[in-house]
Length: 233
Image (cartoon, rainbow, N blue to C red; front, side, top):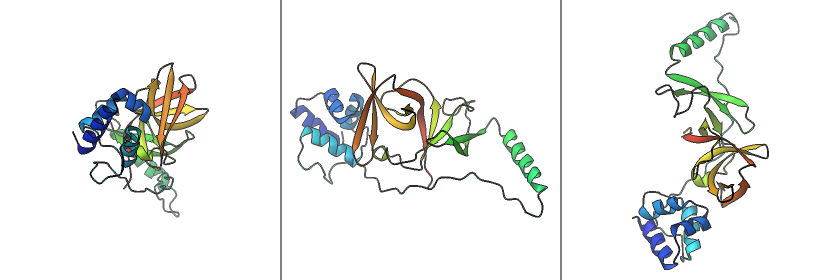
């Protein structure tokens, strides 16, 4: 165990609370609590404070706890599609440049794919060349996957920031404790899902504070699971 895991484990036993009960109070899955206690998962400072606060541990902020602190990340500008420069005085070169680019992509068609990047409104704003392995991209069909560009910091506590790209594999089934692209009330968003009893879903976000929205499975349309994070340095 880690020092943080030892502290949480001891405090939980003292409080006579199960991993499942603790996870429910903190908005986390039971297996997440187990991983934290065993030292297999590193949590953010905010998450550690939230768990320790539920357990009634004094002075939860401690340099001895092995927690990860993330720096403030500014909102990245909206990416613009790349346009190959053409000499103004030679417009006939535009067609040749396009043919050359298309031929290059055709030659690498089985190796890479120009995967579209979509914003919150579902409009394509860019493309990213992504490798194809075994005819798939992260297990999804190359012509079906897409990137979703985060427009805000609602997942800051999960280390996903505004401007980051999340590779989405289309899927209509909710998966527990996974970041998924959902549509609620006509609005698209990425949230961490937790399946609850009674055909309900908990949509978790974490900016400066942890927040959870509970909806029925009929209210939330599952669009896909997020399988890869791309961050420009």
